Length: 436
Length: 177
Image (cartoon, rainbow over all chains, first blue to last red; front, side, top):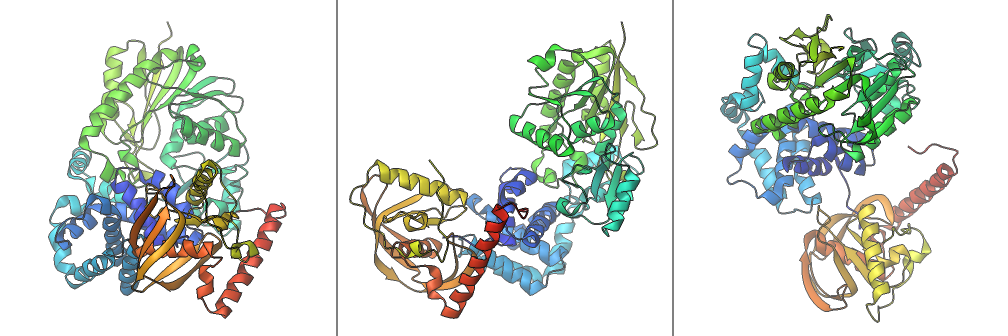
């Protein structure tokens, strides 16, 4: 027997995994393909990402509406309540359909007992919507849809425009592309998009970046399968540009997966000898796939940047891209589950991991060589404070200023405020090893 | 373990009646394991041996989200049923079609487990529906048989058309998306 898969019950199963601690991108990559119809997949994705974007509000409302909390094994029903409320509040779905379909999804999840519960909770919400919203909005974490600890960090970091920043993190990101300059110019590709009736703008800060007016399936992008473009945020595209690889140089991408930046490095400098390393062998396969689609190749190696060993660590490099694991707080608009999954106590361990990676990789840089330290975080301890601490102990390292018209100057390096110039919140610092 | 081919309606072999399993030996256990793997991969929540062209009274079921509660019913028999319930059903042998079917809402089943031991269990809701759906397969019966003949005809035409289309795709003339 086969169960009918519908957008709402599949979305509930994805969200159940996220509420249980899995990342939204992993859970949706695993479960959304069960929906055969592209339209159904689109709705399920919209529901999952929308719910996580609005999670603090939906969670607070559910707490008001439920007499007693649901059991941990019923996270899927919790998710269905979120899905129902999200549709009622933020999607243009007819109210009766939102209630009826969400309740029906409980049955398709094999939990007939919950049909009445979902129905009752959603109807109760409709009756007292204004009062309830006013009540939960009194809490700033709900009003700004950001966990309190993170909201405070953003307020400290940007006392002037923290509200703008929070808004950008809670908004839908544009779909951004990187044009493969090996196969044609950005203008050529804009023309191709125009011919296909797809509205697009260039990302001023980048050499190859474009944002689309509307997100669409990559299958509908001209020449996607032939490697004419990749999907990549504008902020992420600045990494390869800043590292500035030259043909023939030995370059290491030490935390490479899924390989977006590796591909960009090779596009910028054909003939580059790139070694792409990642600690996760399965994710290294993604690097391989990405490079294959672009018709590019690199030496791939599974390895831990915090404890280099193996062939890739037996040589030194002209340039190193160090896109370290981070809190990913700068890319919350693309990964809204981070607001829910990341805890304040996760930050110190990740800062320590970054420190150990930077320390372990530095010896692999040739004297006179250049290392770009990159994060998609907006927290100073992962960014300028990390770099300052490194410079304080590593005598052979010095910072080279990044002279560009985008981003904000920090004591060291450069920060893109999330949403600035339609880009994600990346941080970059360029370090050079003194020639002896 | 291996993934087995699932027969599709209107394949006449789906109409075969399955024979009781005289002894639960290693070959039966291998069939059970292969059927479970095939069902999980499909993905489905129940599979009868008839659907993988094995004329044995063997059924596997797992209605859990986590694929963590595999149930194996060998020589199953419904010894009691109660109530009535209409639920939308689908079938791995009738892909993409979902229609409401009315069945008993509660059943008591007697069967052998994977180790050949006799047991009895009760089931309601989705599990009850699934058990009845799978035992039907062992009798050569499909859920579309509960629909009007007009509806069944339409489904048959649609699936025949789709299988012709797939043959063309496999031929390489079209790209499969």
